[in-house]
Length: 199
Image (tube, rainbow, N blue to C red; front, side):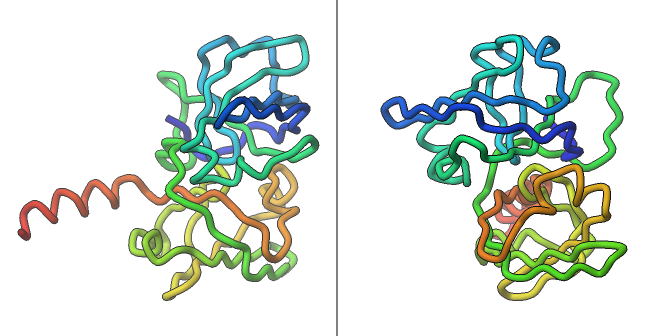
C-alpha cells in the first residue's frame, strides 16, 4: 500500500528482456538504496514491483507480462525517469490517498497549461476508467496522488503545484505522453457491492 506521495525520481540504468518479462535496474537520485531489502515493494510510476537485487547504487525489479501490457513500463528504456515511493509502514502518515500500485490502465496527455502558480494537466482517459472518476475525487497519475479538478466524457484534469512539478516526472510530460492511471479503489468496491444488490 502507498500514499501517492513520491519520495524520489529514479532513472532506468538497465532494461533487459527476459522471455515475456522486463528486468529493470533502477538508480534512485536520493532514496537510500541501503535501506532497501530483497522482497521490498516499491512503487514505480504507479506500479508496485518487488525488489529482487540490491547493489550499492541501484536495485533491480521484474515487470511481468501483465504489468507490461497494462502500463507504460513496456516502453521504458535506459534513461527513463520513474516516480518512486516505498510501501507504507505501520504508523506512517497518510498524506495522499490509498494507492495500491495496481494500475487500471493508461491515459494520454491531451493538454497542459502552465498558469504560473500551478500546472494544469488534461489526460485523455478510457471511458471504462472515467466512470470511477469524480470531480474533487482522488486519482493516481504515474504514482502521484492528485485531486481531480474536472472530468468530462473523454478527459480528466488535475492541477499540480510547483513542488510536484519539480519533484516528480509530471512536470516533464509533453502532449501525447502516456501515463499510468489508478482510480480510487473504493469506487470499484462500492460498484461491485451495489451491483450485487441491484440484480
